[in-house]
Length: 188
Image 1 (cartoon, one colour):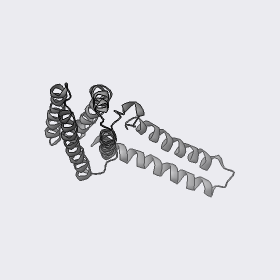
Image 2 (image 1 turned 90 degrees about the horizontal axis):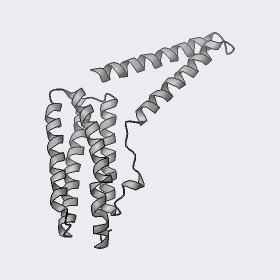
Image 3 (image 1 turned 180 degrees about the vertical axis):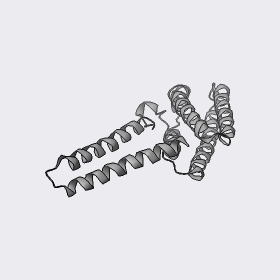
């Protein structure tokens, strides 16, 4: 409900500023009201977009493990988290939010299977602990998804925070540990 109210409030503010600008121009181009309203409108839009940027993940080269398929999976996961963030932040409806969540969960599982297969096939010595990290993450996400059914707004926000922190920490930490091992085995 907070998302709906927030989106509604922002819409009302923008509409009010647009009306004030239009009415101000009826008073003449030399009147200060339309220019002040126009500046406020630009400021509101700019500030809103800046405040939203911090909620999104951006790929950085330091996240790269040097294996194209895995890096592409990680980029896709960041994109899917951002898609879920968009669905959550901009009230797009429960169906789109749920679809974004399902796509993210399914792709995460796919990526884990793919990464684990690569590690196991190449005899990575840290395979079992790495796999256990994946299993713990999936269990935590599935727990949050089940809570999502009863409290969508709060749970989706908690889930997004968890996913962003976990993914970046995992890519920057645990995944970096296997990077040189696999590259030494010729995996690119």
